[in-house]
Length: 227
Length: 289
Ligand code: SF4
Ligand code: SF4
Image (cartoon, rainbow over all chains, first blue to last red; front, side, top):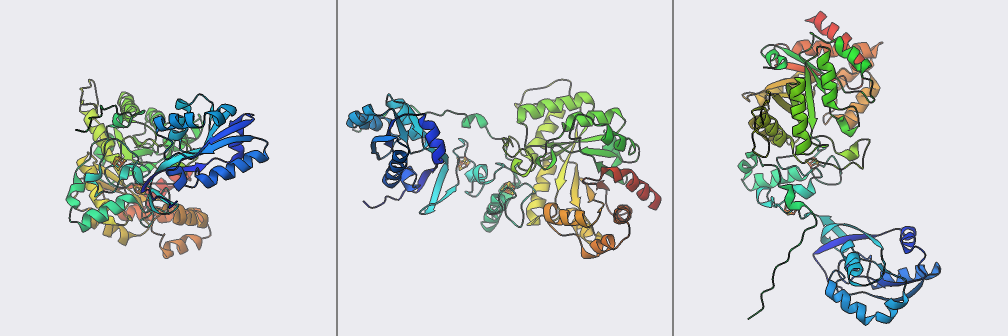
């Protein structure tokens, strides 16, 4: 199967194996869910990682009753369907280990009647440039300022989320917090300048409406049926 | 009008004294006491460099009680708009009239790297919030009664690259209510003159940063950790070549301060870790006047 190439990914990192084992809490047998989408791209919950995990667990005396890599593990109705498909294997397991993002773990936990174990830490929404190179550029703040900042997000790419220009800390153009990153405010300034739009920067941007970022978000819109 | 604001009509001297790391402020207060009547304002840092210390507002009050004129530094790092505004009302109740707004170094650079970085407001928004509150309007637009005036300012880094961006930010800070600026330390007069040329015509007072150099170790520390432009070689040579490096550093700083008298609105003394040398530095400044 050709690897699908997603542009936007929920980036995950596998937890250290000892931590996963701790989460198993003595369960004798596990069923494993991966995810065919983000976790496959991050190489944390694809077919290969599920097989490697099964081997490691077996070495610790934990039986793996089965495993699957759904298209997307955050699709809750699909997870229920898979639950019916693997009824027997899941039934024999003491718990389900999910190698996917936190949303996937909870989709499984909310859909199937078994304890779930999270095998990954979810890190960020990542843009990808090439395989295994991911960059955080949007953190879904609910109050987008990109129109004022030349299309570069200071909410996410400036660790301080400053809205009115840089802090005084940049070192030779690099961010004081992580000197492997360019200071995004200097980038905003340079881009606006090259586009002849610097005057917009003089306006004082008001504080953000943080309540728009309050969690948990949800959208419940009626779906219009196609005519 | 705050005493500090009044002092800007002539050559003004402010000095920085951090709150103590601990509940006993007496040793810093003893130093501060020796500056009363000799400096026009004492800046109190706010968990500077992300290092946890006594509340800057509380230390301002302790300074005020012994007759100092505190300049309350407020960083955006640790408090959201609710906490900032309530602290501002507290400052007004204490009679603290000067506020210096700063962004604040990121928590990972300090001694509580896992602290949640707040930055609910940035320094411009903080300046605006302080000035609005001082005229009786809270950030939610509602009126607040029984408020007192604030005299607000901020910091400027003359060595920031690109400087055009720093200048743009400075103009924004002025629009947001900044009336004074304290700079990073300078170590040579031509750089000061060049800097003052760039901010000429801006409607604010610029207090030139002065740091006495204690010796080689401090010079290395500043060059590596604090400054964006290294200390000039001849200054380094003067200090490191002296028999008593600390004294030479203080003398050089005092000469520098007096050289500013006909050039700048004033100076801002930042002893960085050698607060005990503030009174002798003032002696030398006064002797060389
Ligand atoms: S401001 Fe940044 S974090 Fe917010 S929605 Fe826009 S891109 Fe995303
Ligand atoms: S250096 Fe730039 S990107 Fe980094 S915290 Fe400061 S303003 Fe933000």
